[in-house]
Length: 196
Image (tube, rainbow, N blue to C red; front, top):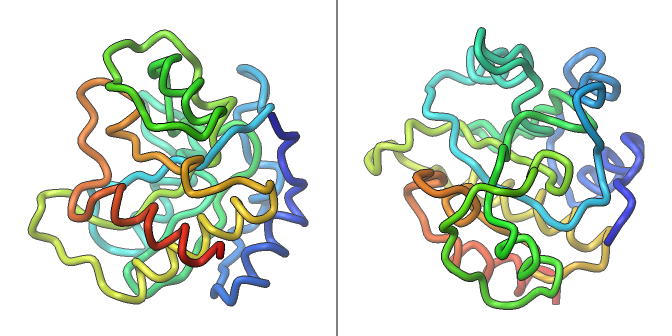
């Protein structure tokens, strides 16, 4: 169980990891905290956006959609490897997921199958959205994957978490497929090596 980093500390750990960070105006206080708690936090969730085009993707993740208000994550990682900070606090990215998965993340153990949607994930996870169509064909540039690895590792390091505190949306909520184009096992291996 961890208290969320302050917005300033979150920015500091990302820049200390060597990331290029773009701060969208007002990101530090743009959140959905009025709808429920933010924290305690237990891990980091990774998504793909299902979109293309950096500017429109960042705008969508900041503003949200008619059926889902923004922010839709904390950071958007575009194909050039930039992390765009769009919100901080409770964000509409995880939704309801499997409580057994959350318990495994907290214990940093092997994840069980996600077969329920009974637990609020928006209060418990940091969220990074990655610009990608998610069709299995849209490429994942090396700069983007390196930025994703660094961003997630930075948050884990700040909290004293291992790579087992990192999950994909597809491991949390039944029916989700993101991120698509690499495996979470591969990403966790990279994060684990970086944390060492």
